[in-house]
Image 1 (tube, one colour):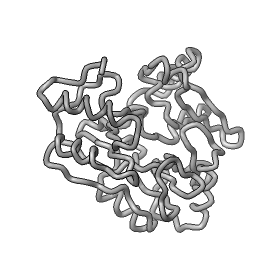
Image 2 (tube, helix red, strand yellow):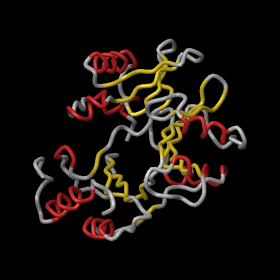
Image 3 (cartoon, helix red, strand yellow):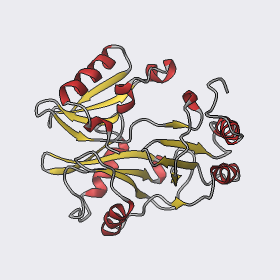
Image 4 (cartoon, one colour):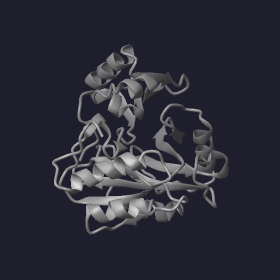
Length: 263
């Protein structure tokens, strides 16, 4: 499935984001040195559930208005299982570990590899990532491709404590907007000596939910990716989102077409 920011003309994308900005649903930050703009949804969008097409894209999307270029494509915003009354597709799915760090969006621009977080060019996590990148052979990375990694290190602890600082490779989107297949991502991870987010296999959705219920405090949860590209989060019992996710998953597993919006 193609990244949605790559499926519309640039003028339409830019106009939609500017309209969402005017409505207070997204914010834009500019990097004067490179001309890049960084787009992120606002707290107003979250609290008012103002998720239109363009707000969903604004999770660290990087554009360049001067060249009308989509520079970097992060994950579109995705939600906890059961949020927004979303129907769970009856499709095959993959399961990945959910890490408790900060998403960094790694991309090539103006002659070098750069990193941003969803709302800042110069966040501590972006600066930490760029510093690590300067000490690595990055020849395995392809300009035009966006690499999405989780930055985990002691000073960036949120809830889970990790033993070693690391950039964990989660996914990547090519310049054509297509998500890299697992084998291609593994090749990059091996070359960089980064680990990838763990993959898990479950025979059924019920098995996945049961496992989430048993997760220890040292693990946050899972990210599910369906074959249509939809991602959902299922968090463990040590996170506030677990109870809601668990009951909505049970509702769905009992044969309902989708989770009710009121649970």
